Image 1 (tube, helix red, strand yellow):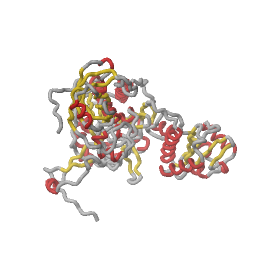
Image 2 (tube, one colour; image 1 turned 180 degrees about the vertical axis):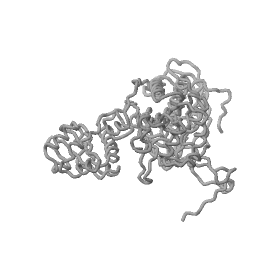
Image 3 (tube, one colour; image 1 turned 120 degrees about the horizontal axis):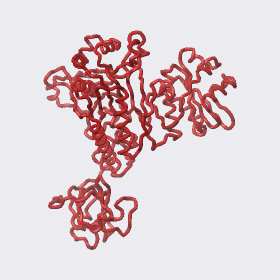
Image 4 (cartoon, one colour; image 1 turned 90 degrees about the vertical axis):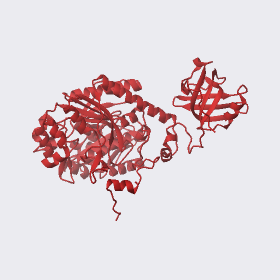
Length: 593
């Protein structure tokens, strides 16, 4: 039989009590971490979201209450009334370790079965089991701290943008499907059989319509959905800090973004982010780091050695240059003891898995130079390569030769792989930067046409408009990403508001007037009534929390996440629906062949 709370009401949280509260009568509530029966003494560690406090039952405790304490087990939900007193044996491992509560009233509010795993910090229990019982997993103090910190981050977000004149406006969750990029999640209509809503991949079109509506500064902590393959930093449903501004250029948007980053890191972590943030063009980021989201917490920049090897005797190098590609290298300092021949072979397989045909390498040992291609090179050519990359004894150099679309991203991925293995990435450092001047178009080898690298409402740079028809590969966009420790945190752009230019852009992307009208007509029609110049961006809240809290996965900062197969183990969704529901929606399934 469970107890009623009666007249008792919580006066304090468990983790808030200190020595200054000595002699104070308090009421605390929570989950039992553990019970220790020492015969004439019983101690209960009571846990809530703020921490743990010790409850004490001894010779002075009423026998009925002492006997009740004897029956309590881990994860029982209890309420205890008592007097705070100083402990005879201090526990320096917890903030409340100087005190305990001498209990004079105890109520069991919820009995608990033995949980399938122990509720402790940094649990090593398999994630699948923890996610099946996520409501128990969320009791763990480390996960509770993550979720509470996410709440505080959201509060800073709203405060900062409110102070800077932004209005929070909700946009629809059921919208028109305009498939581009990732697949839409579709929602069938009961009233209009054969027609579907889509869940928004972002509020893009609606926030631009809000600019047309005269709300010149909009923000929203928006839920977004993408039906795509998952990984550690991706979920099918995610949260975006979405913003849009009228009567601005790129510098105005970047300034707001930088101010937000500085405020957030200072308020939440006490970290000062120096402004202005560094900037790299897309071309420079790819050439220096092999990535449009470079991790700049460590050096190891890519080095172009094409001019040194274009006429060498190693055909892999010379052939790559002659075919319009390049030969690039990265030097890992003091890596020779870690990157043995066996580890080099593993790294080569990694390079092949990414898309390279192979990987060349040099190891500079105390005994001399060991290399996969030295026999094809002259001594002067090898010396020139080592001088160019700054390699000395103890270093390892890896080289990729191919078209730039293979060479750069492959070497960029190897750079990260090696840095992680060498453990040279500072864990407590936060490096933010902007990547600007993205290519507007991305060539699609399957279709033989060009796709928009960002969305089709991104404005091209003024000096590139002339190339829209003749040389689309030369067109750069007024687009920008904020990158944090090698993770793309935000993506944004200045938008097209000129109907003539927008029509030209649709045409460059291979959309007929009819297709453009069908997909985006309600936006382009709105522009005919006067659209202020505007731009904005969306910042990934989940990713931001993950990096600030130094978590390994987005699942550590989301209360009820999906697995990598897009399933939620606790509620077992997605699941089959009742045939009556399907009939209401006019949906039937075809048998798999």
